[in-house]
Image (tube, rainbow, N blue to C red; front, side, top):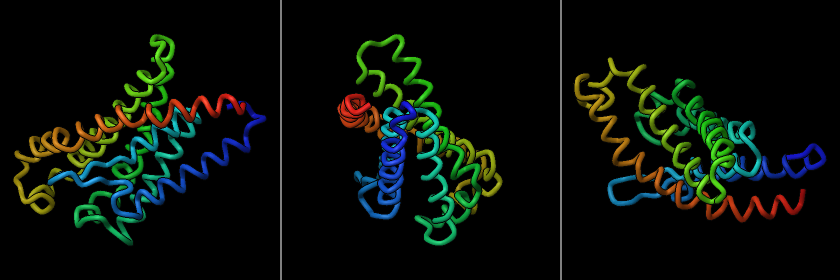
Length: 197
């Protein structure tokens, strides 16, 4: 976004930060329960911000989500597990920042090869969502595998298959959701923003 539109950029950043705060605070806005699953839709918000504002700002929005996750682990945890794993900023903050970076890099690379913006956004959204899932679960495995019996009531040997199962049951539906919904919102908004710049 050009420097002359810095006010618009700051307004959009503030808007996305407000959306992230709402999504992490109000049930059903950031997490959609579907049967036994809880689909996290916040990665889609981060990717939309990335498409509209750029990779760095997308990483900032992802970082805001991560910081909120980190703080909530101390004062308002979403689960008993959160008080153990999300108090580590490498688990709670780093993966969220990487959503914006991976989605932004993918979107820029795809724009050069794919003419349809909606397809580029969709692929970037899928990759961003999977980045979050894989990094969070992978880092939980790295840092907390020794605590598997207490955290998950399973032995250490079964932790990796369990986490891979979570990728399949939660991560894949979240990635599909992001891939479908993100272009429906990001593409029209990007056209509106281009007209204003």
